[in-house]
Length: 486
Image (cartoon, rainbow, N blue to C red; front, side, top):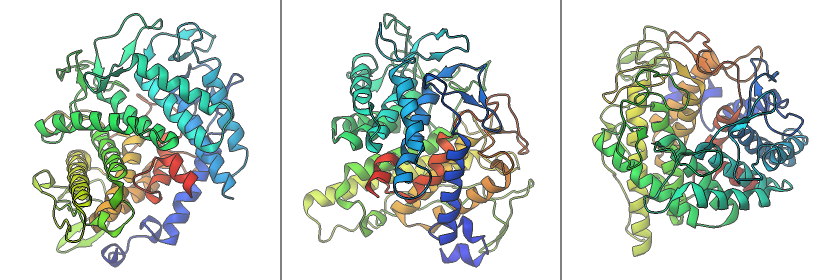
């Protein structure tokens, strides 16, 4: 932390300062206020426009409704802590009602992808959406929202029946609406959010079977990452063979983009760290969580100041170190086991192993994506050699980088991650926060101008809100359960 203060970074970007805590919480509450007009009459969530106005001409989708139920459940608990507004609980309840009502398929089970503006049904049943239903119900259960337990019970049963592949230890991706035909596509985006949902469900219910499943998914993903220099192939066929040319003719697809998505590598890193700390929790919340030191990260290029003999800056001509270099070849160091039981020593070694991998994933993604074209920001996609494909900057990628840099700082104690966190927050404040209309711009071009080709408007507040909360919550606990415990 001394290094950050010495180079003069504004204290509101410096983790663990009072100013930073205030900056994060005030922005979290501002996001809750921005999104409060989301519910339709039936509870499903409207897609939100630039100023938070509901877009009644767009479909009301299950994944967005679930995200809003999740976020406002957390908002409800903040209100009970004396921070925020009590009506957030009512908003969470409306979203839960939407998931139990108009978005639920009473005939075939599960949840529709969404409802069109004229009341029709969007086709197919998606793992991605069903994972978010589990997340929503888990968070609502933590917040004491009526109907949450019933929703979670049904969501888990539905997921177990249709989406969990016990043989592969992974998920199926998409069924038709009637649950009679399974699409051969398999993808890691849905599996990533399944890990998030399983960890939330395990924390909310105490059922560690879902934490174990999350670990099975994580181990498969780690293997693929290791085979590809810690760049994660996104798309697979029904036998889990990589399909690296998928959507080559439509590279900016919002859910199945062509190539590698660095933001997902960053997000996987955070989820792996969360899973590892929660699984080997005997060393959680102790000084020993910082004993697995990961070396290799030299920090994000982007803050105006001097580190050693190197001058860096956030201007559009920034060059030099683009982030973490060489981290993929580093190993765990300084694991103290002198006075631990055998079990404790094994747990510490296992946790250190996974934290090491999380650092490698984060390092590779940031090195490939940050300032890749000479301007500050993280590019959307690259090829398997790390060359940028889609240069746009997506808000969710930045949100996950903020989260993961903070999490890696917590579990390693390495100031370089705190420095990254500060640089990312400064970039957020300068380029991505909409200081006029609220929330964050969801898409910027390669020169950080607002763009709307993939994500017009500001559909929901999930990623942005979590980025304002997770850096100050317990690493090994899902966000809603962590807020509840406080």
